Length: 332
Image (cartoon, rainbow, N blue to C red; front, side, top):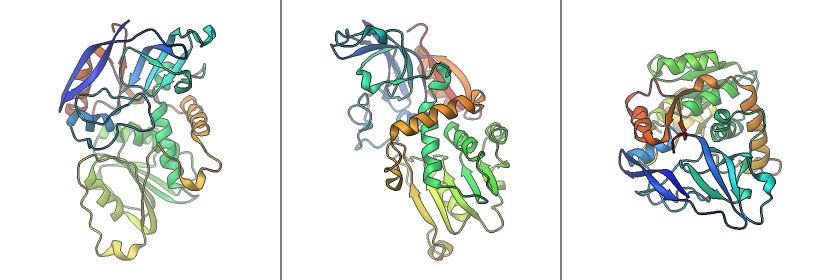
């Protein structure tokens, strides 16, 4: 069977190509994609050619083989339906809705162990946000907010917004969202931020933030995050800057501040938590929050995968309009 797949072929150049999808092997299934979510952070780096090519695409995801050099297929948030099964897979799996960490393509083969069953009460579009929710949970778990603490979140893209929504459920002293885009600041306040401000208008809490999360994707924001963090505070860096350098002012105040700076990335769980937490437990928690939080306003665009180039151009040209883009596959 022939499918259609999104290929990143050069900086700011995307093509949708035919791709053969054979019948599933004895222990495989074939999935027909219903929707897939575009990562406005990582995929923009790939699209721009700013992702480091000396790294594996993602060693934890079998479908992302090779490195990040052109041409490549990329993406990791596909929701689909099992339409064919191999001889050793029970027929009862046919028609099941599943989530897969798989590139943007209309059909693909997978091992059942690589697929995640979608709860019946989670609709397709919410299910496509599973990696976003899992990432946001990881940031919050790494940040370990405490009662009464002042928290600042730099960056209110879709991951920043979901992180803000999770933090809003804690009994914090204050929660401040920071973003250049007015529309995103409005969503952040609707999701529970006490205030949402432009970076140039940010007034840090009186003694500084206890916890600051840098999720903007802008290396310059890391210096700002350090500057608003109080003595002995924590800065969690969830942004991936790719090949963009981060120049930091680590003299003066920082030298005596005892501020801790920690990277956070969803492919691993904090070593201090691994005795009690694993990926399955985190997925279960992610499904719960996907059901409960008011996330529908985050999906701003639904674009047919055949027009994939338009989606990435939109992220570049109209970031104030595009929060979360979903690909649809009706014609693929």
